[in-house]
Length: 233
Image (tube, rainbow, N blue to C red; front, side, top):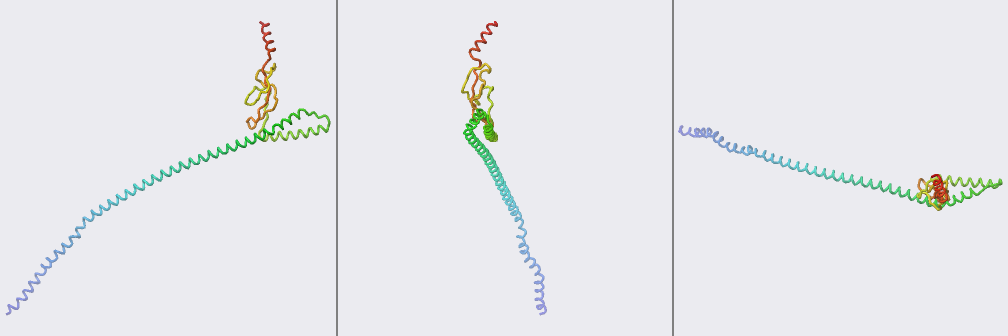
């Protein structure tokens, strides 16, 4: 019976001694469970793929920004050129308007002065004809001369100046010949006398001078010169 009583203890000891082996055998699946953690290495490859995709996206973004920058530069250059053209057109328009206004003012001035010039002519004729003898007439003449001088000064301030034509070569741009006659004193096409005074306005002809022009020596003078030359021979 003692032998039977001890049998259970031996069975228990065997069970205890077998337990570690069973536990170790039970843990092998646990080690296998850690296998998926070790299989995380392929995840680094997926991260590499993600980085390459991010680089591609970044490169595409840079290309897009460069394209936008190029477009903005082109647009800026176009707007700058357009602005320069507009400024140049406006400057030309301003200059053209200024010239047109000056021409218009000059035309108005010429028209007005041309209407006043006959009055100046009358003053000139009266001044040449008046020969005051008495003191009262001399006082009137002095008043007249003062008025005439005032009128001449106004003309000078406006840029009007009289022509001096006697003895000058005939110039159709300045003179208007109303008479031609032979002259022993002047060669041909030289102004002998001024019949109506001409005027300039700032270098521009305000009124042509009416003049008498020489035709040179007359037929009698030419015949005399020919006869003289024959006698000399």
